[in-house]
Amino acid sequence: MTRAFPLTARGVARLQTLTDTAASLFLDQGYGAVSLDMLIARAGGSRRNIYQHFGGKEGLFIEVVTRLCEEQGQPLRDLDIEGDEIGEALTAFGHKVLEIVLQPRTLALHRLMIAEGQRFPALSQAILRSGHEAGVKTLAEWLRNRRCILRAELTPEVLAEQFVSLLITGPQLRALVGRESLPLSSAEIARLVRETVSAFLHGALKGGKSPDA
Image (cartoon, rainbow, N blue to C red):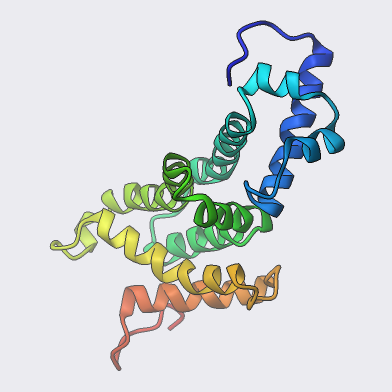
């Protein structure tokens, strides 16, 4: 943001309306389809104000996506995995992560990352860091304190990456292409998490003990 002067309370409110409206438009229609005239018609203001505060459409887009990254990452930063039993902890973590990644706003942000990745590579990296990588980091930190029960040749980071990928890849891809009916029911989320935890902890070979056993 290029603003270098204080705003009145009314000015702050108008700027908030502008960025909220821009976020909705960019998430819904993408960067190229949104014009400043369209944004002004929805939120008010003027081109002069947009250029004064953001330097133009590109600066506004960067501001909006940066804010969306902060919003996406906050629930993961706040996530506290409770309990010492690994199955219970992974189940609680899995429930929360699926709830976050399957939210319509989160899915729209990922579609935007895919569509605009070449034009704004730094923003795409920021979206990745605030979402997937934040979840992996949270789980890896929890696993690091349980190294005594984990395979020595696999680092907490590798295990966390494998669990998160196993958990979210299928449901997220189906949701992104419209094959997943959202929102998922609590029973469906519980099933996905239960199957992921079982496969992660006990593998696919016969004789693997189920966490429910």
